[in-house]
Amino acid sequence: MHLERDQIEVRGSELLSQTKIYLMLNKPRGVITSAADERGRKTVYAFLKPCLSWVAPVGRLDKGSEGLLLLTNDSEWGARLSAPESHIDKTYHVQIGCVVNQEFTDQINAGIKTKDGELLRAKSARVLRKGEKNSWLEIVLDEGKNRHIRRMLEMLGVEVRRLVRVAVGPLVLGDLPKGSARPLTVREKRSVDAAMRAGNHGT
Image 1 (tube, rainbow, N blue to C red):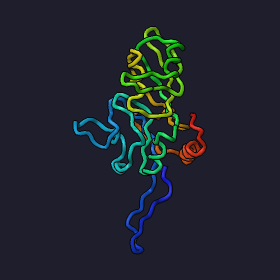
Image 2 (image 1 turned 30 degrees about the vertical axis):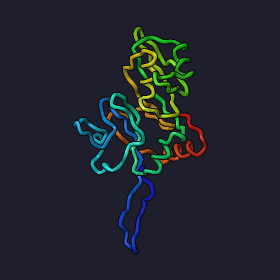
Image 3 (image 1 turned 180 degrees about the vertical axis):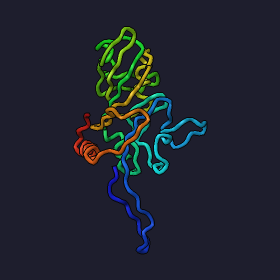
C-alpha cells in the first residue's frame, strides 16, 4: 500500500519525498527478522525487492517461527501497532508434540508462571485439531513478551513443532505464499487503524 508522501522542505527546497509503504510478508521458518545478521543468516529482507530495504518490521517473529510479519516505513504507525498498550490481537497456530484436551488450554488461559515468577497468559487458547501424536492449537495474544508462547508451553513440558502467526488484528495471512510479500490494501490499512482507535482488536 502506498499512501500520501511526506515532504520535508528547508528554505523552500524539497529534501525528501517518501511514499508510505505497508507490507505483509509470509515469513518462512529459519529466517531472521532483522536487516542484517553478523552470522550471515538469511533475513526477511532476502524476500523483498532491493528498493524496499528501508522498510522496518513491526514487531518480531523469532527464527523458528513463521507467518504474518508486517513491514513499513511509517515508524509512527509501526510503533503504535506494536506498543503493549495497543493490545492488538495476534493469532497463532501452534503444532505441539502431544495430544491435549481442553484442560490443557484452560491452563494457558489461566496463566502460567515462569521460574522467575513472571506470569504468562493467553487471551484465548483452544484445540484446533488432534492427530495420533500431536495437536494444533490456536493461541491469541494481546501482549508481546519475548518468546511468549514457547516459554508458556515449555513450562508445561510441551514441545513446539511449528508456530505460525496467522493474523494481526483484522489482518489475516490467508493464502499468501511462503516467502512472498504484498502491499496492504487501503481497506486493510484502514481496518487496522480503526481497530487501534476503537479498541476492537479481534480478527
